[in-house]
Image (cartoon, rainbow, N blue to C red; front, side):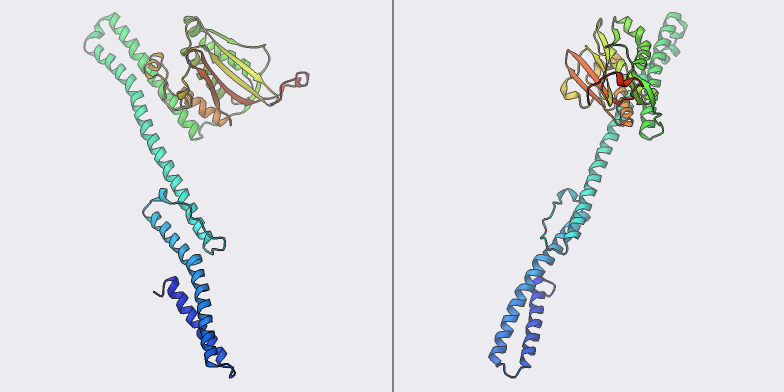
Length: 355
């Protein structure tokens, strides 16, 4: 009883009323009836004031804190709602601090759950991706060991297929290592002035033969002038290699892959456009995830590790920019990214649109 707001208010009001009455009794002129009235008034007023202060400013807030602490102990952080506190509440700061702590811990728990789900999914994806080339190479080798090695034509055919599977496995491991090194900061960006036009020409040279086999034309749109940016040559070359490789893979035979540059005062936007199968809208937000494939069966037929766009995303993150995609099924896709422009010496002779 004493440790409730009502009990404390009653006790303190009695003390105040008694002290008041004793003080007034020192004056001989005050009658006994007046002392009783003074006792009653001082008791009533003191009780009401003390009860209101204790109940609404202290005990209720302490109970809220106890409830919060109880939920924290039970790890029911998601059930914690922000408490409304009175402006004059002396425990307002403590209450808000506990709520902020619980909110922060809940965010950490949610993030850990997401990371755990991502870890499980990633391990499953990696296991599946590794299993495919390993089993293929294993099958070819065991077939040769079972006697097919004596047949020269079969031997060469199976060895080439086993080598192709192992090459795919090596490519997957290299891409995984690249992603890991970028995420852990082991790969440092070496920024310098680079010419995106020249870099694109060099990447095109790597895919000339591949494009000719399918009669896919590779070209840079616009006049031949320098598109100077401040970036890491090697990493942006990786970005362009992955984007152009994807564009060729998903283009129709006899079509073309076009790279263009939108140059403004501050930035150069590089666009890689194809007229291929396109990407449905519901997949466009997820294509930069590791191993995410729009059409898994067809994507596997086209080859690749499923990590190309994830590498693109991480490299561009290191350049404080991001890749954007515009696509329409059946009409092709355009991937673009922005890099800070480096103005050439004779820049004052040219006029570019404002950013």
